[in-house]
Length: 167
Ligand code: MN
Image (cartoon, rainbow, N blue to C red; front, side, top):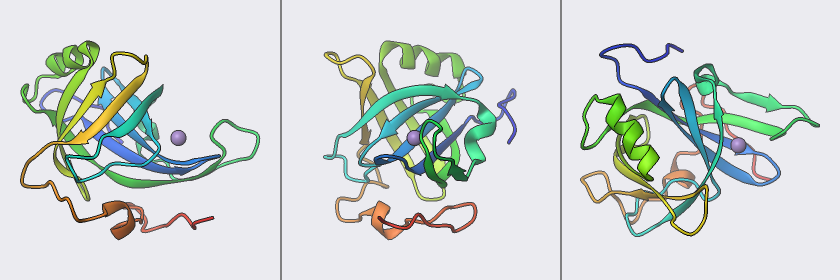
């Protein structure tokens, strides 16, 4: 997968990861790497849902299309699929990577996702009291949906149509 170059939008990816606890890894291309959060309950389309997103280690951009099995004995052992991917822009800072970086460092980002499954605005806010703990919240726009459970509706990989069997 290409890294970001001038005039190209940065990528996002959400990998569904069946490790010791099932979770969704939300990753944004930022400053040449994939800044990453583990979201135990996954993203929601309902702006009233505040989904905990725990910041985890950056991953190299080439990891964005990884699917397969992390073998036993390695960190995060279990199945991984690409649940969604696409590009994003900073909502208030269209195509300005530096401004997105500033927003990240200040602990409040608003991004517009253009994925296969997810579209529109999402906010990521760092919780004041707990280092590394953020909240992922769907913003109130035309793509918000209080009824639809997109995790149950659209469980498959957007790259290969693979699924993760429920334990
Ligand atoms: Mn993970």
